[in-house]
Length: 165
Image (tube, rainbow, N blue to C red; front, top):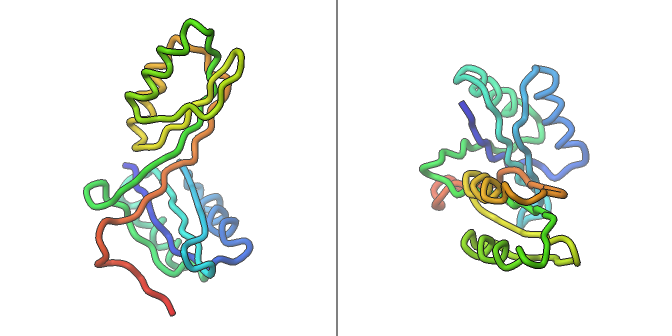
């Protein structure tokens, strides 16, 4: 089972280290982790994706709740949340193939963000399945470099929003 957790934490030095250390000490794997300061600079939002059975995922949530810097944890249920990932992919492209790559990128609502004599860099944002499908269609092209942010997301609606003074 795969579970995404959205954590609201104090924006202090070492908070990411404390969280990753918790996973390391207990032998849990982090599939992806992304973080960034919120609208209030006192807090950081961290999205962690972990894999395990129901008991392991429940234990992860309990252990995270025990950390001093953690203010709130939410499970990101796929039916009740919006999640996205950003990917940059640099491919080797000859002049004759540029239009094909451009068409494919437009179909996936991506952007060409850099072009050189022998390469193109594409920016694509969306659900992980969308990014995987795009990569599958690039099968005939040499991928020179690939960078992905990992999943980030929020629950829908305003019912469970935490307002801190």
